[in-house]
Length: 199
Image 1 (cartoon, rainbow, N blue to C red):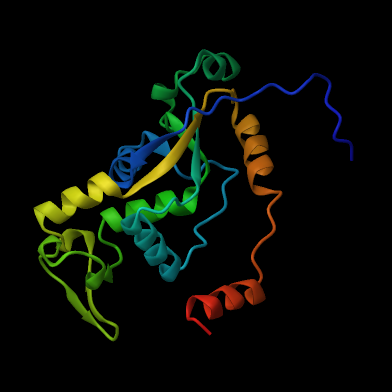
Image 2: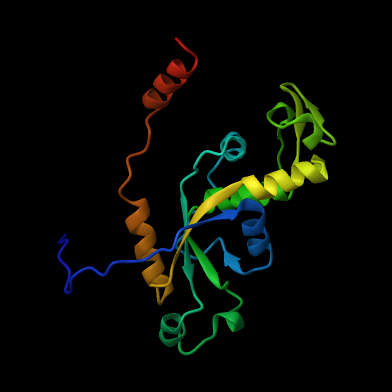
């Protein structure tokens, strides 16, 4: 395998911005944002991971970057036999990285899972459900004020690229951003959990 390229690398400008989880979920529901291009992996997060992401949002912590490929470009249209992305029904944007976080936004906003009600101010919560861990709240169980809080403060950093002209180029981008990381080992996570508990 060689890492050599025929031409020097081109710098990719991603235009990062924070976008509300609710708005991103709406874009997915309306078919504007494609979560499952052919190169993407399936849903792999557990409910515990989804709940942890909502906690991250509520605390105002960064949750990694979501990378979207803009398919409404002249490059895309030219490389796809002049097919306008609006006419293909395949999404105007494709999720290159961050599918699990976007899927969590969709599931949270559709009330498909609940989080501890104690994480929110009491006047943000209208209805709860009993669990073995105490009362939990779904998105649909928030008050109007609670919903507005979540819509305003639960956001993801989204970087948008206009440089991919084909799904193959998107897949190459996917491989680049996902193929080089070193997964956390169980030992690393257990150590961090031990430190977090003060032991």
